[in-house]
Image 1 (cartoon, rainbow, N blue to C red):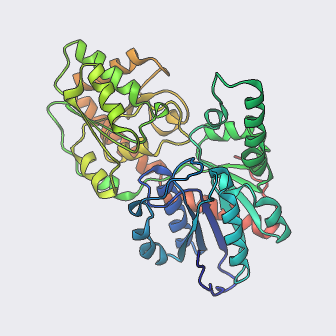
Image 2: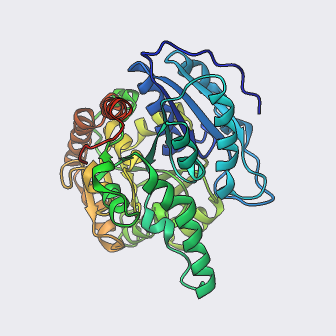
Image 3: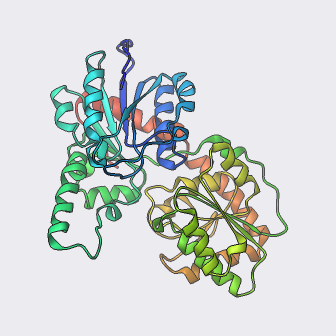
Length: 416
């Protein structure tokens, strides 16, 4: 790791350092969230440093190396225009939970060159920072953006007592304790706020709800009223928690009823063969197209062609994919769980099914297919909904104001 000298900026420009546990070029909501928060804090006048760990998921020795295409170098120049600098640091050799050690080492080098007013961490990469930052009188915050802390802390139902005890102790040390020691926590939704409050035991007065924003280019995707609703889309990780299995099962039920004039284009990171096998098992293999993750341009191109987004996640701290689909003018079919009801208007911009009720999920899809005009209007309503409520400018302004208050007064006393 080579950290070049960083010249101090004028005192009136606060320096905010953001640690991110993965590579910034991954085509997912977390990387986009980090880049947009940094960009918009820079627009508001902050000097922003991003410490990005070149890690791939929750791996252990021998750890997987990040592919060059996911490092995210293509974002550096644009970010630098807004006083944002990216510093990439290596992952720990042994285990993902130890990635906080190279983060702390990099921070020590930076502090020898310039002041830092605030450090914001996402998850495990901030585990070793609270005490160190207090000793340097630097404020510490967490961005609570995990899909679900309840799911993250839930172990296997087959694990024994000893393994369960060890896992809980490790989670307590590396995740829960640092969150409790943070001066402020920015939660993506009321759902996440409640998880942080009740599962993590964080004081309510230190939690601020800051919904995410959506990149304006999604709202500029042209739409025209279709005569039929035939093109469905999914974009997200290929994991059970993201609901791809539920979506395919629901579409299998729909096809079994004779509704077969549709295609489902599925994009994401994960085992593609597993998804395709699921589709064949439910008799819809010829209607499901599976591919890897899309870059921003590719995603906008696919959204322009889509009529309906089927995104039945089992939990979301916000649901950026759901918000982006709405911004593109596409109505959503999803589960009524997690933060999803905070991001959509059920029956207006989306159709929500009770959690794990795949049969009801199929009914929601059928409702959208049977009434193309209503579905088109729901998409337009979703676009307006997102434009009014979810912008990165609003998110960053709320964060920046609270950071300035915290750094000047020494304590955050706001309400969520």
